[in-house]
Structure formats: C-alpha cells, structure tokens
Picture 1: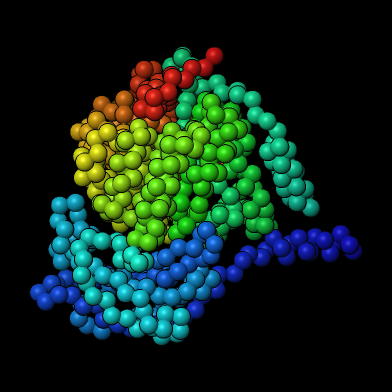
Picture 2 (picture 1 turned 90 degrees about the vertical axis):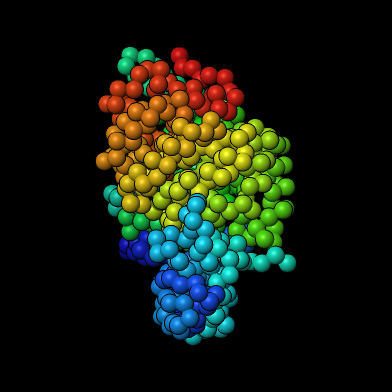
Length: 145
Length: 343
C-alpha cells in the first residue's frame, strides 16, 4: 500500500507542469502615420515587463496582427499573465509593400511604440504615432532617462 | 516500475559522471584514411534556473509526460562543463567554444563569469566566448559596454564574442551596437553572430534580425573585427538555406567574414546538409568555414552532428586538406591558437 502511495505521488508530480495562466483581453486604438504616408500596418503586442530578478526584461512579444493607419482597431488576444505586466504596442507601416520593415537599401518604413492605458485590465487603449524609420521596438523602450 | 527504475538509473549515472574528472580522450575523426582533429566552436551551457518559463516548456517537450519532472536536473547535468567534456570525448572533439548568452526573451542567461569559471575545468579544451546584455540599452548600454570590454579583456579563457541578434531582439542594422564590434576588433576577439531562423520561443524571425546583408555596413566599417556568421544562413525553423546566398556572398567579398554551420549536422537539416556543403565548396569557402554544432542539446548530439556533417563533406568530395581546415585549422588561424593535433 505504501509503495502504491509513493508511486501515485510520483505520477502526480510527473504529470504536473507549472501552469501558464492566460487572460483574455482586448486592446483598442489607432496607429497614426504622418500625412501622405500610406501602406499596410503591422501591430505587435508586448508584455511591457516580463519575469523577475536577472531574467526581468522589457518587451516580450505576445502577438502580431494587421491594422490600417488612421483607422481605429480592436483586437482580442490572450495575455500571458504568467510572464509579467503591462502592455506595450509597437507598429510599423510598410510603405513599399514588400512585407519587410526596411531593407539594407530602402529605409522609409516608419515605426513607433506606445505603452497602453489600462494594460493590466481586460480592455486597454493605445495610440501609436509612427515617427522613426527602421527601428526595432527596443529602440523606443525603455527610453533613456 | 521498470521505467521508473531505468530513469533512476540514468539519473544516478548522470550524477556520478558529473562528479568525476574527465581525461582527454579526443581522437578526432578518420577522414579518407587520415585522422583529423576537431574543434566545435559552438557550444551552449547554462542552468535551468536562469532560463525563462517558455524555454522550460520547450525543453520538457523532449521527455515523456511521466519524466518531465526530471528535466531541471537533467538539463543542469547535461549542460555542465563535466558532461560537455564527456560528450566531447565520445565524439572525438579536442576543444570547443563555450558561449555566454544574455537572452532573457528566449533561452535565458549564461553569464560571462559562469562561462569563464567553467572553462577552468579544462582550459586547453574549453574556450570562452563573452556576450553582452542589450535589452535595456537606452538606460544601461554604456555600463554594459564597459563591462563587456572588461570581461573580454580580463576574464580568464575568453577568446571571442557571442552575439545573437534574433534572440536578443536587436536588428543587425542597429548602429547603437557598433561599439561592440569596435571593441571586438580592437581587442582582437572574433565575433560569432547567430544568423537565420530558429524554432526557439520568442526569437525574432524577420529579415532585419536574420539576414546577414543587414550587417554589411558594420562589416565594412570595422575591417579589423571578424564576423563569423553562425548557422551560415540555415533557417532551422523553416528547414531552408534561406540566407546562405547572403552568407556566401559576404564571405567571398570581405576578408573579415567567416561562416559556421551550426545545426546543419542535426536531424532537422538532413535534407539540406548535402546541398549546403556542395554550395560552400563550389564557392571556394572551405578556408572560411569554422565547424560548430550548436550543442549540447541532448546526450549524443555533439557526436551525431559531427558524424553527419563529416559524412556530407565526404559525399561532396572535400579533400583531406579542406576538411582539416573546416574541422580545426580555420579555428586555430582565426583565433590565433596553435594547430590542434591528435595521436
């Protein structure tokens, strides 16, 4: 009987994995491009700050989806609560339609990043202004002191 | 019960191996009748507690449900310097490059200090590659750059630099990082740079983080810095040689560019490794390819990768001299070390 209990305990431990809690939420907002700048927009959602201790870092990618510049968007997604807190939103506009955020020789695709309001709730809002060409999200955030 | 017993035996054996010292039994490989020394410049290390949860999840996928609880222990044992030395012996590898990494978004952190300490286990066989943390560059980049230069110059056993733009989430064309290349060039420490895609969670797969053409500006600006294009453009996520043409072109045009075929001897690359070695040979780049595996991954990986890669070179009719260059002489020359020999 004792052996069975030990075996059962081992199996229970074996079958369990740390949980990865997710929360369904919605982000609404607008991506704003300068006048005359047109093209499809790609939006990337990030956990603003992830993990703890030495592993703590900004901008852990959650999801990517398309949008249109100047038009409101709403997107529902699963936020990885187990990873961290806050919601950062990066967007870039594909002015030449090649699907690539700038090539080594064509450097016109603007990008921008903003921290969403109410990023730890069920409904966040954000406005992203596209200001700089060919920059990764980490170029914008965290900002210099 | 039999399965649990076998598992207990594996764990006990692993613990015993980890506790013992490791003699050097590297025999090299027998190639067209000659025994050649092998250096594997691309080896990972680290500890379970310094890896993020999504990478834990990926590692646990490689063991059956009943054994997932063993993964933290197995991972720490397998990635230890002792286990790596034993795998090197099993594969016939004389020496390796052990990589520091600062990739909290993807695979975690193995510090410069850890790598330097572990290379102490056998400094003639374990060579360290320092790295640098980049995820908060605007706030602490200057501090990290200073630490990086100090570590590279002063920590024991550091012969090179490891960078992984796609893991570290910075673009190849981000000029904020050019100070790293300046330091590496000035100190004479060649840099390994990860190129192309990977199935690891959180890694960037877009061209600016993977296509080595985005590095050309830096390659040109820092001619004293050596850029070793890691994985040589092999996109292991999509199982294609996506960026190999760019790698070949840059290695042909620039004296300070080399390539490394990490993971091309792994099972995922079985359908592409022959094409890879043929294209590199036809490009005349046997003198620019530095062997590496991207180990240790799992027991037996280092040996498997070496055997399959050497077999591919054999099928492509690499000469003994070309193979010697790839397996060890290019490494010795680029890193300023004496040639490796085997008995």
